[in-house]
Image (cartoon, rainbow, N blue to C red; front, side):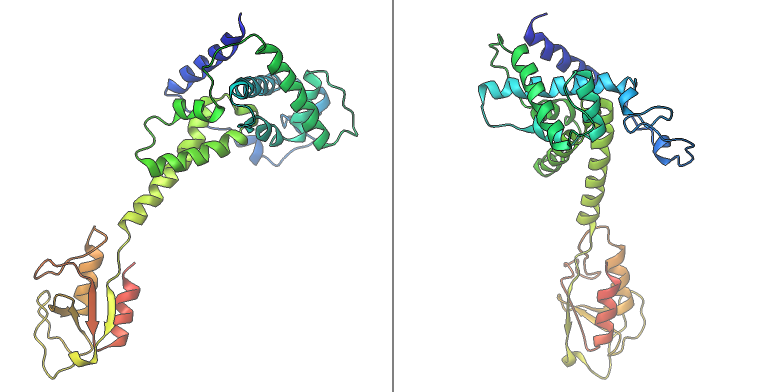
Amino acid sequence: MSEPNILENRVIDLTNDAATNRVSVPDFSRILTSDRREPACSFCESPGHNVRTCRHPDREKLHECAQFMYLTTCHYLKRYPNTERTHKLWLDNLSTSEYKILAKLNRLETDSKTTREQYQEILHEHYIQYAEEELHDVTSTNTTTILNLYIDILLTGIVTDIDSMIYAVTKLTMIIKNSGRHLMDMPRFRYWLGNHMDDYYRFRQLRENRKQKPTMIHTPSLAKDDHDECPICYTEMKNDSVVQLGCAHSFCGDCIIGQIKSSRKPTSECAMCRATISECRSTSKKLLQKLSSSIA
């Protein structure tokens, strides 16, 4: 198998995996289980052994993710030197237990005194060397970063405009850097990214529907002996209950509150002339405060 196919085949696998309807929901049961009778492995969280003797299949999964990350990034760096460091950021975000697993799989010289920083340096140099050897004879100019590759695979259909695109790319960048052994798990990426985008669209909907409060203006000059009936509820209005809108139509305070709160739009309209309610005037400061606090 030629070197380009190493990347091409893995990208095809990722694309096909992402195209399915399967969404991988992480299993939180082991995380939430507190009744452990003996120490558990810091890598797989299973009891009865430690990270040095772990045989969990995620070991190979993590190793394959490291290979893929460094192959993809180093392939890009061959054409655009010093422009990308996602591979190092991804590696730096692994746990010390994962460093120990990778060091053992690759038969690297480490011991109990090896520090986290030393693991990072040793593993980074190892996977750089691995990628350079694999890509030595590759001349293809069809290069891309991990981020752009995942944007193409994952963002179709979940972004609707430039704002949602910016948000999704920001979150995807964070997910990639923190993905660890799940770097190539596209259903899991869809689950993680989908949660972020659900929150984004929910917040944006609330923001778009948030009521725009009219300007409250204390106007003592509106006081007079007699007021008309409220055009909505027909109750006689008084100085401490009447509210005059910017269009000069007047209503009782309770009806104005109901009018504004019942509107499904951010703004509300006068019941008489349909003008946007931008101002509320009253002789009563207490009524204006009630209006302001009632309109969320």
